[in-house]
Length: 599
Image (cartoon, rainbow, N blue to C red):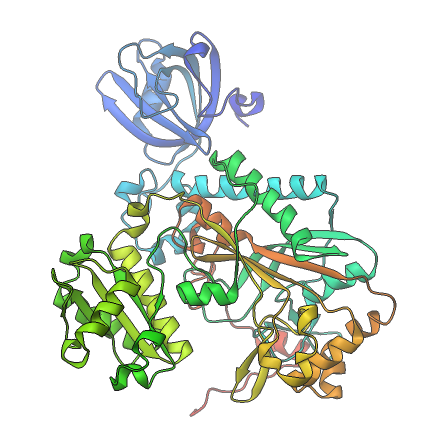
């Protein structure tokens, strides 16, 4: 073992400042860059705290100078030397830029082969994400990614401090739980000790945190791993982390208050950003009417404008035959960007299934005299055009975009248009609002209607509003839930609800969902049994730790804040996971591998 390692480092590579000039120091880290200036060799030494420049003078350290001749990027080394001023050669881009370490002793802990890609500078990153995930341990050395994980760690620490100070207990729930078909697709774990039986990896701690309330724990939280076997995308992973919270004797406001306190503290301590003392609220119905989304981005305007009452008697079949007619008014400052070719592309956008599947897009460019340049112009009277202009606040040069269809298509298509225009026209920056727009969306529908009947919008233990209880028997589609989502900049970062704790209400909800007594007992029997013994009213929420970290860090993918993520196909390129199992191991689990179809 080297003497420098035994003695330990005196500072990290981001700590030294001008006040340290004259001090003898020991630093450990990786060679970030090496520059040979003939007599003098310069090394930028890096660890997760920062970078310090080291200068090696052959007159002061001849042995170290000779050893430094073989150094190259990512060698792991120790240096001992004296802190000196850089004089007029200050590097203002580095926090340690006023000083450098004049080296006296050098030790090489380990050498490094030529790296498969550059990790020293994001601007010089020369690898695809696939390649970086294969060598994730090297990718994680990049300073930009390390900053993300420092932020994530601080967020987790602040979560524990804030909730503990508010009287919450940090409690654990099991990962391997009862498999109940329905809902999100579970990962299954075979039980060797119980042949033919399976555990499921928990998709959330939902039932267990409710049981904590039955057990009298009063306030619970957990930073927990959850597992869902779903198709993946940039903001979804098969295993993810959530901040899970449950409170006895809860109202929505009593759940939301500590969450707002946590968010305010995190933004202040980590980002230096002041947030309002209370976040704004908006009902689901209002969010859909104004933005066509239950997670609206409120950093800019471009809200939906309802035209149905104006066009109802127009005689134009496209409008009169549609239950909803809504539009967006894009101001004249963007007129040049919305060329005819661009409008054609927007039309194709709304026709895509994932964007609503609209039949088409009605558009009009408002002329100086208020008339329209539009394929629709000949179908509408001048009076109707003037009325639409007035309703939409149109000015000469404004471009009007209108969708006429059913509720789902109209709102989804206009939302897709709104978000596309947000990005292509840079509307967030132009709006000049706070970069952090939080919003509570409340009063969601309790049920969603499908071809097979009703399903829960959240989960079957979400409580209806007390005022809507009679509607469970007469008109379930109109029942609103005591549910609430926390939205940030158009991203859902948390969701929760007040739970049902009354057996009569629970029975009515199960009846609407069409569950048989056998299904109820199979899926939820043990929870309903617990609810026979004096359950308190309770409610909670789960926040997505990964997604919050991603947004705080300014990252664009969850993979940038999850240390060892999976690809969109659910594979780990670094370890080669998932992989097969041999016949002996499968036999122990009473599993036999079937040959692929067609063989």
